[in-house]
Length: 358
Image (cartoon, rainbow, N blue to C red; front, side, top):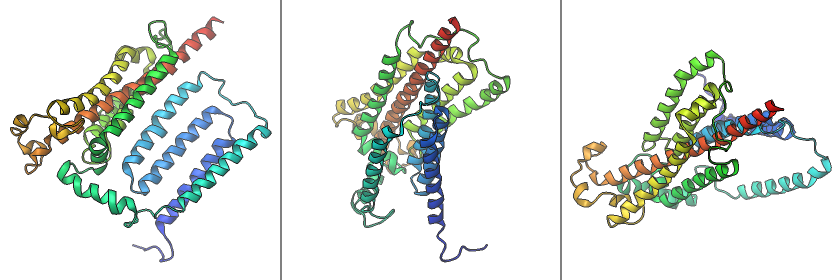
């Protein structure tokens, strides 16, 4: 095996290549006038960013960036541009001077601030020397799960994650309110014939959609052990439903997953998350204190081998509590993404109807 020269830094070379790719894609996004091209380039930008995050040993963040930035966001934006002319108007260059100067100024300030940050992986940095070390020492005893990211986000920062879930739910409700509720809204199923696709796509989708849904559940329940969790799983599940709509048509998908069911699932996810916290309070603990999820008399009867950890049977509340709130996040995220897609897709169908009448 030929070793790299001593003066050649492989990691630095990878960073430079990825940075150049990001700059090239960003420049292409600025120059293009086609909204379709811009959306595709944004997806490529997110995918390259996800690769860079993997290089920086941040698999959970990379996972999220890939499924959200390169996946679901691209699909939703593609549905949104169908309501537009598809191409931006040519603007007077004099109107772009002020925004360009503002971007350069803000970018310069960010670069200047980043120069004062500690080096990546610096053991003496505050995050690694104090906060990070405290979590690394406390998680095995307090939480008892291998994935530190899940332990921090779902247990130590459970309030923050609940707030993020509520924000996603509120965003979905806001989009639904703008696009309409009820039987006369844009969410009504389109007539038969719209959304008919090639038979090869339908046959391939019949194999892919169940696998995507199965992978979503794997990501959901594997979040305690590695990269994953309810947010990523929810986006993947939504992608499976949206793929069904793109291939088989909006009418069939709305029959399988009605908009009312999607909105109900989004509400149920937030209620499940908050309900876990209330259950902990009823048993004498604090809100989202999973150690009090079960009454002590019941928890003592649970054998530790059920968790694969016979020496830490007291972690049962933490394991089960995190599993329940992650399930709530999955329901809210998946249902909200589907609701947003239904809104834009329904509007597109309505626009097609009006155009046909003309």
